[in-house]
Image 1 (cartoon, rainbow, N blue to C red):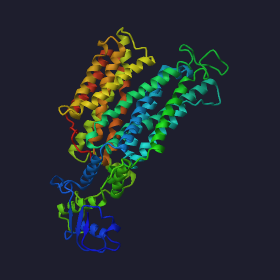
Image 2 (image 1 turned 120 degrees about the vertical axis):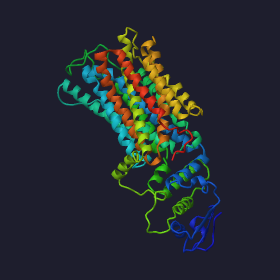
Image 3 (image 1 turned 45 degrees about the vertical axis):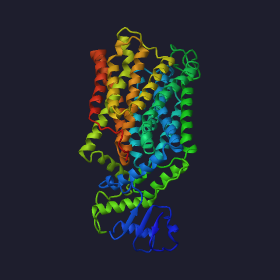
Image 4 (image 1 turned 90 degrees about the vertical axis):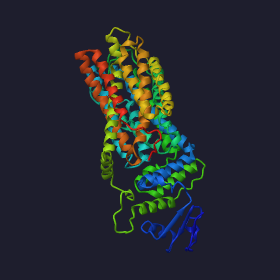
Length: 570
């Protein structure tokens, strides 16, 4: 209960103080003005019965971090409630779509190439366009999520992907010759693929950022388990393609039509399978978007609101989560005022004219560009942050370097050694994708083992991934070879995505995750190009060392990264 020594107009109840564990002793016309003035006055005495707020360990901590810790305390007290589970599966939907869309272009590509008569030297533009979109999406959405908020970014990424992804399958009728029509259709499809990538590219940085800001401390291992949805997305896409594309596609040896009158060729009407597949993938994306936007009431992240100086809204967000979870929450603005009083007194700032010190400086609303530049500058604000940021970029870049080369050239290397090449049929791809499931499950368990934690689990899994690259030509079964690499890749990336969200503070978490993902996407574009040159000039052995050696750079960089297992996510 809260007691105030003076009688205020409307009574204590008018100010919502009757259920707070505070006692205020001082002078003033109303409670709120007294509380606010107390931040500048040492003549005002504030007492609290909450031991968390009076913990000596809180002394010297910046005010933003104190408020974040207080929010963490209340989220931990709630536990893993209904809201967190809803959010977990909706974020899992973002992971699900990430690889589902990436896989769809590879499965649809051959049928599209036959219909449009695309030469091999132009065929790669489809994947380059999608990869460029992923890179732009990771960069733009990673920065925007720290500016416009988690809510809009959470929904807009899927809205973009669902609209442009569905449009890929729509037949286009353009005046001109058949060759002109096919050329323009291919250009339009590549542009649309880039737009899909722009939406999908923001999924993992945004979803991991959002999820960690609502999970209780003892459930943060779920950040790794959410990666289980990625191989499930591949499996779903392979099943859809297996049921649709072969049945509604022209024969593999058929040629593109040179005129509209030709029928003994790969016509549009005889090759609708890949279009149906994009319709189905787009429909799944729309369903997940509807679940996020219409069926689920997203509560803005209290950490984001706090980083923008919107304390009252941050408190309301925590209370709204408690309401969905059907629990009580006693967090109030009074708690924040108390922290401000104590921080002010720690600094011994008694004059209203004195500039706020770092301990008391509270975030203010800023313009978007200024906010983005500020977040970028904070990544390099100290030697500790510079080291953390650059090492994270190195890990993401060479992680993508390794799995991009292995995925693109693994079967070709086996073929060059006279071994059986994976025929690429849908069932084999499903088997390979299923190897990723135990990888993510093991990752979820391994990071909670004290002797491993996040850091050494990443060291082990990245080293295993690098080793699997060297073993490509040693394993006679191509499906097993690809499955081993995908197992190690899934194990490593499941831990990496969760660790990144834990390692950076809320005010620049989205920017940090987005930039790290951008470097990974960028190296996914560069590495296959360089690998192709090396394959042509030096042979497959050097290519294997290139892939595995790149991932071992990850391993070396991870050794220098901090452990985040027991650290608070501020």
